[in-house]
Length: 322
Image (cartoon, rainbow, N blue to C red):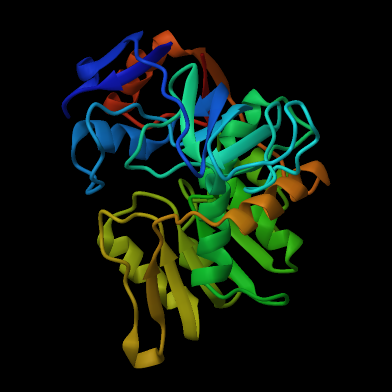
């Protein structure tokens, strides 16, 4: 089968597109015929060697994946090939369309086929193309975990989302609005309309307006998704009420708190949650969550995409088609 992999960490040039031996699923695993994988910034970091994730070398990137079940390992399924299945471990069938957030240290979906733990996949949304579903798992899980698991947001509260114009930010806006939370978001001019369309109650152009001056009161949770300066981040804590929460996905710098006012800090590193991913899929099919795909590229162009990412941030969400 064709795949992209690297045998050593380094620049984008360590990625190689070519033939790789196709594996059979072991007990508790399934093999997927890949519809698409999705590129994430962490893929770039793992390849470069500056993220502390112990990947097994050689490594195939692409931990967000969608595809069709192609083969079952022992202990998985029990449904005849081509049967309906239910998209859940223990009830998977050959032919099921699934989506998953794969263990980061193992081979991912930048290939024609990938062997994955059965518990890592759920039934794919039926309302969007299967390939586009690869764009959903880790970014939507990040948004959910930041808002509700770490932030503890509840209906009637207020959240300030800094950097809402990115992919995670727009998921966060949609999920918070759906939960009955008042959403204040910052964005640049190029993404203001998209953030407003996602449902934000107030959108602040951070390039023209001082954030703290623009607020009409404090918030319960501050969620930072942007690579802002630490001094600026610390200043934003003033926007959080006593006893509130500061949550950040920018793990390269410390998340500030204010112990004197009971404001706690949490840094998010996305964790797999199969039940939650199934709920997010259901929201997509209910029309309550929009999956963003801005580019679709063939697998053989993944090295060039990593080179682009190494030079700056990738705008939007890119899915990679084998």
